[in-house]
Length: 189
Image (cartoon, rainbow, N blue to C red; front, side, top):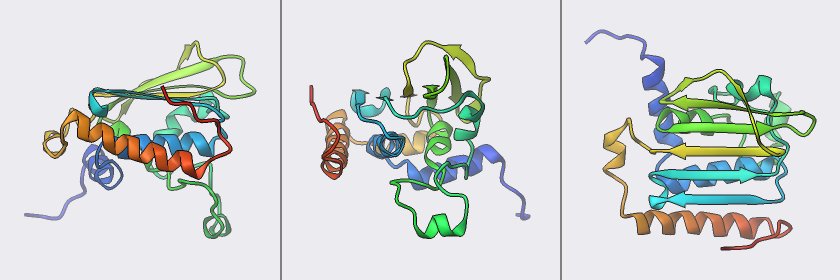
């Protein structure tokens, strides 16, 4: 077989396998992003152990309209600009891989309103194809909805366990993240 360049959608799905192992890894990455954005309140909604829906809503800094699509691009981050930043990184995540990886293996909706913005904006990604930002109603902060995780990668879906098992993995990560940030109010419902 000759050597050839892989198509971008396949590259993204391969990269997603490094970041997105199961629903718990999606929750971990998204909550870490919320914490890095300065969120003081984070709401997590899970349906079917995260396989049908993961929704993370925060009151953090938000994302500007012009940066929404960039947030879903590989190797795009607000956390480092230079080697010095990389060597002194103090955030939970910084590689710019989580959102594009998740978007390549799920249907994702990103809605955000930056602190200085008058309105919120929303875009959707389906298997990596990204829509144009559209106006939306949303308070300051960001909501990310991940629908139908691994819908386009059935081999990955086969490795998932029962809804209860996947939920327990999510609960474990949320507890760890909550313990790492005792300054953020924690209410479980």
